[in-house]
Image 1: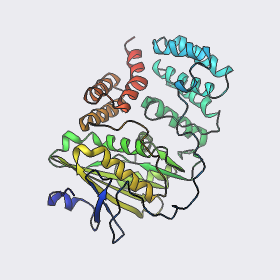
Image 2: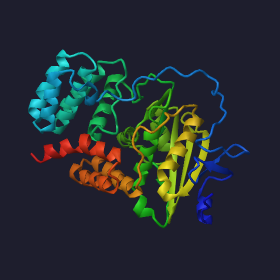
Image 3: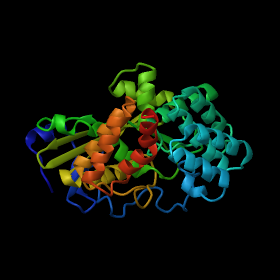
Length: 375
């Protein structure tokens, strides 16, 4: 197993027994037990091992246009107008489709109407489209945080707050888990890897999306509430935000990069009691970061009695520098600097051409907004 310098061990969670994790050179540790945890990809006995397969969860995100392409000529025409940055025509056409079509075409049209209004600088109009989308429930509206403009997600959270009368996430699942931005505990490489505070949280959410009976609170929603309520930073603020969002637990993570090595830790904290339900760490080479996040995600899922999907929902990242560029893009997009965000997503793709999250955020999140700003 890879061993860290003494100062890294001192920063890591104490009292753990180490064992192999995932068969990739990463290691994991577990608190509250005298035995090491088995490899992440090895069979483990749990209290639910003999239970029958759970019923399928509702869709994890809203249907995309690709899911309904060809079902409505009017919607197809609206998408052509939107792709060509003819936002006035697109808004009119999406509105007409939303008023006449059934689901799921109607829901796609309303979501795209929200995007179009946002590109036009009409945030109130975007909010009205999203309010109409919420009125189509059930099933619960779940916008995809990987593709929607962050400003549209924030507008959606505001709509939900006014519609529901609370910040709590609307869900039809058994448990709700929030994942906070990670803390950068690095010393020698601190500035270089600081953007990974956002990147590792996004990677973990992506890995855990689709877990059975588990509602995930996207990191941008948690950050939006922290800002909205001026809660500040730190674990106490994260717990309070989790409570307001209706989360049962919050995951707090830390990463430490030292040369070619990487250490990730995670704690699952009960929102109501503050009790630490799990403390884990995984470590290995820095170029194994994706396997480390995947392994840690499995350990978190096990701690909250959830089952992860067999494979991640998107292509694994192969370049740590690509994830850093992607995370910089997220930070810039949060400040609505879309041109600079686009440059970072393009950089991420130049470093890792198959890095799907960067491609999605670029194509569906920021390119239309950059086009709108250049008109």
